Structure formats: C-alpha cells, structure tokens
Image (cartoon, rainbow, N blue to C red; front, side):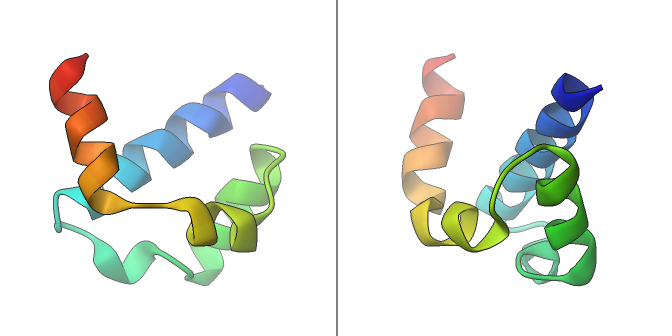
Length: 60
C-alpha cells in the first residue's frame, strides 16, 4: 500500500512541476499523502525543485 501513496505523491509532484496544481503543495491533502507514503511533508517540500523534476521526467 505504501507504494501506491508514493506513486500518488510522485504524480502530484509531476503536476506541480508542470504548473498545473501548485496549490496542492503544502496543502492538507499534500501532507496526508506524504504521511501515507511514509515521508515527511516538510522534507519533501524543502527538497522539491520543479526544474530538476521536469528534467528527470524528460530523461525517463
């Protein structure tokens, strides 16, 4: 089940990197998804770099 929430988090970060759902970052829902994925929401936010994320998406 943890892998499911990691995938949900990755999808949300993908959307935010593309600029389609920036409001989700830091929201209550974002924090819940991070918790369910077993990750610290503040750590995810501090490490999230939209430009780097876009480069990773293009490379995949």
